[in-house]
Length: 53
Image (tube, rainbow, N blue to C red; front, side, top):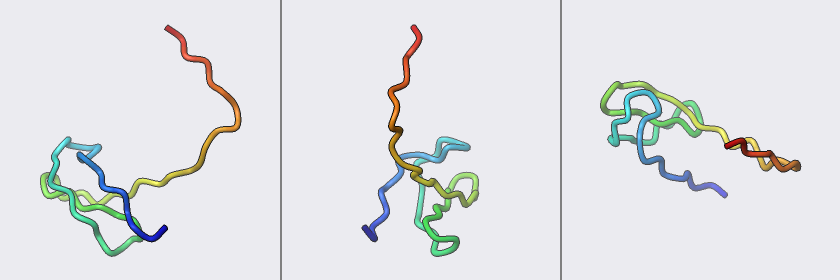
């Protein structure tokens, strides 16, 4: 898969003005706080986690 999934908001300031950045690979630029960040998908867990209520 070569396409990036779109993010909805910046994890730092919450702004929705996000644009893909060419470097580093998979990075996003926030128009609000000007931070460049990347989100990495690690994989699926083979164990089930218990949710405490």
